[in-house]
Length: 135
Image 1 (cartoon, rainbow, N blue to C red):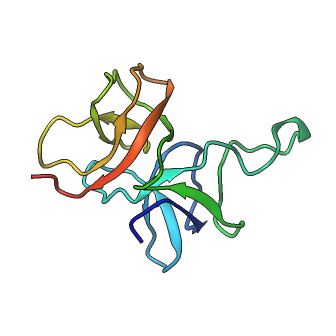
Image 2 (tube, rainbow, N blue to C red):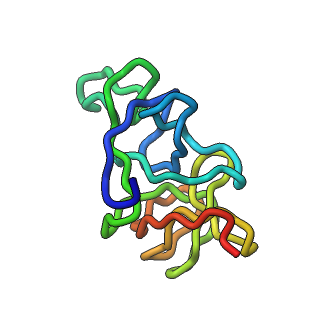
């Protein structure tokens, strides 16, 4: 599966607009936690529960809950939470909290290209891509 959006079951708690990788069980995704993770896509921007209901826990998906949308290569753009200063056009990899950070080496796994600049804590527009161990 190399193009467009997918629906996958959460293999754990996944926050909105975060890098995800495939889970250990087929058909699942888990939040990335290391720059060495093979980034599969980016989780949906919304939470699983409607915020005004008072039931919103801040997650896009949790283990045992329904499928979530994952944006991947082939999608024009989506939103990604970032964990550092990012410039337009930067190749982005994951930090330990699945946020996008600028790649610093050609050995990083890349999950997106920044379509706008931002600083840590921002949610920016990105173009999902998949480059594993980019050489």
